[in-house]
Image (cartoon, rainbow, N blue to C red; front, side, top):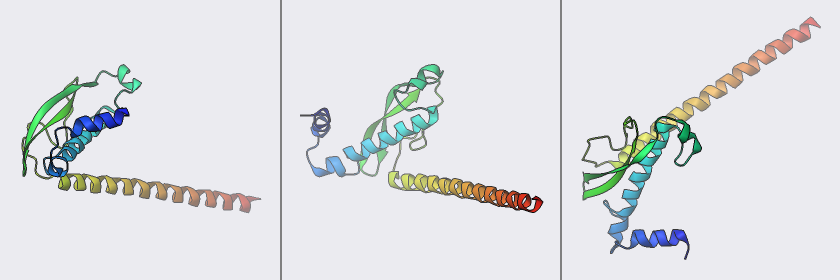
Length: 147
């Protein structure tokens, strides 16, 4: 049995019915929220977990804290990462927030905002290329006229 299989077996040990895995307060939603919080921490610090870059920075990961949140389907305990300087402000589930009803809505909204920013960046890069090509063409025409 591989390490991943053992890990999956350990996670599923306490699940007795499909709702324990896929339901509103199920294992899948809990893991998804915690994974999203870890991604936020990586973005905040500017380097990924276990990266050697973190050794030279003053702010780094400093463990996790447990947090109980209440939602439509009851309570759920998640772990929230923290940083040494205490500057990390999670966006998905902000500090001191105990109620969480809209994971799907927040995730979709964040995804749409990111997509808009990405599209704007792609659009700006295309405009820069177009301006470069126009300038290059203009200079090329000037050189041909001079000769």
